[in-house]
Length: 131
Image: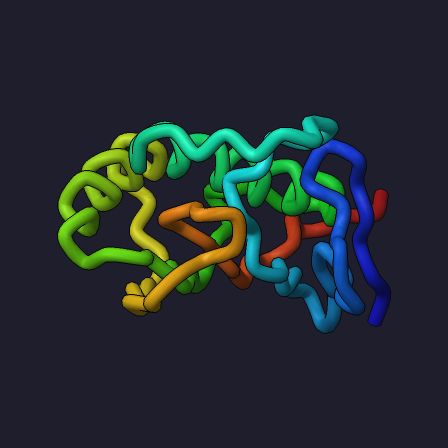
């Protein structure tokens, strides 16, 4: 088991890792739509937040040796279920034909006034066969 840290995604502000790799899977901690390296928290639309949150998930996955096409399970926290349809449309555009298992969980509020947070589990890329 080992932890993943990349400056291409928001650096954890608490006692957790961006991700943990274990037994061929990467477990991505909840990601907010924070733009890495920016101190200002710009909320933007749910569509913009969805694109940014998955850019953050993608960065963590790539640092671990995976990518969005290897997602097995996604948990989405939304601050208002009225935003679900717009989130779902942006999510579908990002995922294309890939349909990982997913749960959408309504919550009262998210940090910094954001409307979406995503945590995920993905398979690592298969190691190259040995000659």
